[in-house]
Length: 330
Image 1 (tube, rainbow, N blue to C red):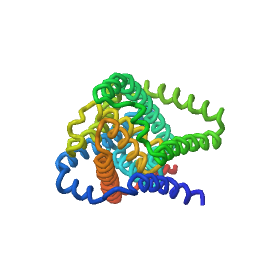
Image 2 (cartoon, rainbow, N blue to C red):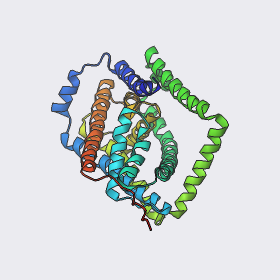
Image 3 (cartoon, rainbow, N blue to C red):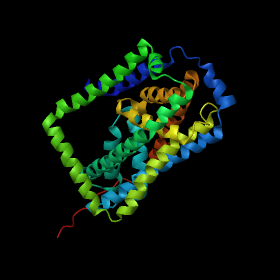
Image 4 (tube, one colour):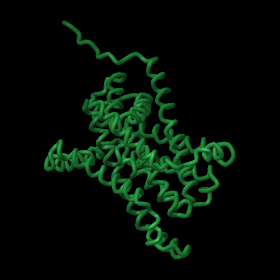
């Protein structure tokens, strides 16, 4: 029952959010946009940085495993990353475990060691994301003020545009996130969790000292997040409603969609739509156009994941599984 609920609840939550957002939406707009407004060229180009980001994750993973005496093939690490994203579509956070299992099965890499490197990666990525978020927030204070001044928008009036149901959904997402964190703390113990988190952060950061080429590791990390941003931002050029919004607004929307994955739904289903649509409307995009944008973009980006995952499944199926060398008898 617990396993079933673990799978169904995130999906149900995402479906509920989508239903609320699109309950009065005219889906004829999607067809019109796909065949008359959207630039398929820009949309397909935007998928390339998404795939490159996953490939770079696999290459970077090799770097973090080498100091531990493990030397997996680059191709295995890349396939493992592809499959981890596909696994997370079913159960959020499952990907971290599944990709370590792939390395154990095909390259004989220690599962516990690979899990430790995943923790290190998450710490590095989280710290970089927090830094980017802080910089964007601070730099956008003036932009927000200028935007409201230039357009004559009253913040109070904008807040007043939220319907009672809009406030309900916003508060519900906040409550769900708080409950999710609280359950984790309760399960592992508040004190133990904080101590373990501090220990993991310390161990993860110290382990970076042993990376053979730290500047290259940093370059990979920055490149991964640049690719993530381009994966999202290039879709702006595929729609007439967003093609003129500019880099700054794209960065704000990117931060919003990145933080939306905190809500435990498959690939940010529902939470991505709500967060990005809210930012686009704030910057003057018509609500219906914003809803069409997030629906199509999320669909294309989600479709990329199983395509890469199936490719990796086929590639790995042609490989023999790792067999530990038998000890010689004297």
